[in-house]
Length: 92
Image (tube, rainbow, N blue to C red; front, side, top):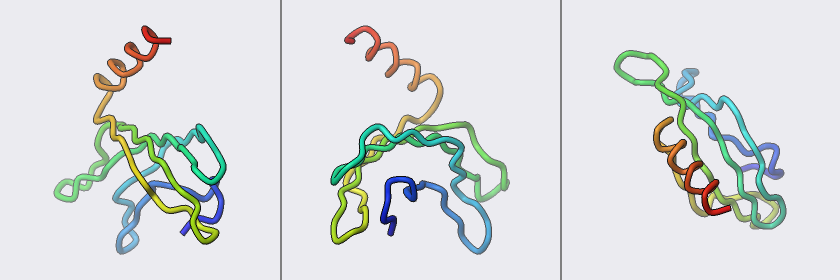
């Protein structure tokens, strides 16, 4: 478990193989509740190739000195990311 926001990651390895490769990270909020946006790529278990870039926004709550995941929203690809960005730009 991560003790600080900087230690939070979506990178995941299994048997020495990176299955989820984190390519970027932006901390949106810090404190007891933290919000972090990650850019990442999943590895296809059949081909071994890394897939397209995706985005996940995750909320963490600090409990007992460690951050625990509370919720997440995944953006599945470039098209959806551009649609979300367009709506946010329109609203704000």
